[in-house]
Amino acid sequence: MDKSIEEVWSKGFQNNKSLIPPVIVDLYNKKSILTVEKLKSASKKDNWSIIPIAIITLIFFIINSKLILGLYISALMLSMFFINRKRLEFLNTINTSESCFQYLKKLQKMIKNNVNFYTRLLGIGLPLFAYIGFCIFISESNQYEHILETYSLKKILITSIILLTTFSFIGIGCYRLTNYLIYGRLIKKIDEMIDELDLLNK
Image (cartoon, rainbow, N blue to C red; front, top):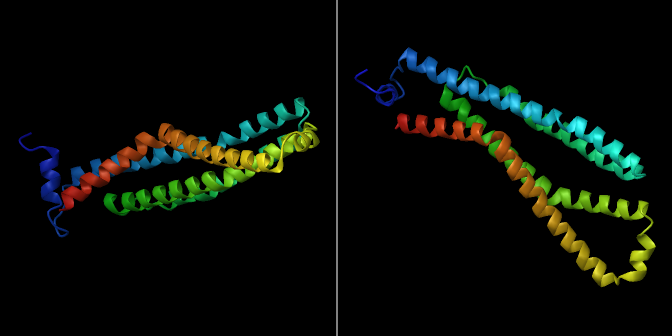
């Protein structure tokens, strides 16, 4: 071939009235739709994996005589499952009959909104829920009175703040890491396709 694909794309996208060569349109559509389908599949598997983990967690705490704590943590996991399912509904609203650039831009925006949502949720919500779980653990371990007798109110307050801050960093860090490991390559592909299409449109 005398001309590279990039050159053909460039001519096809010179202006909005230009017609993109059908072969290139088909190639790019297949590539983008395949990426979206992989993203849907990965997110579905990731979310459903919460269910067995919640069950195993509950069994573990029951065995260790921490029924209330086990129920609490399992309930939080199940809540996250339903929140995830609701938040991931946007993947089914992506209209791939639109131009690649249009629906990939919408997908990119939705992904960023989700990342911001979960960062806030895990950065603020997780510390509070984790702290409640920690208090339940102390209560079920019959250590409540011992802690009050051993530590001053000031020390308990400082320790609580440290725990909340630690839970916040752990929550955000774990989310960012798992998000990168599970979705990193797919998100990168989407960003790259958008950058290429944006360049070709100029």
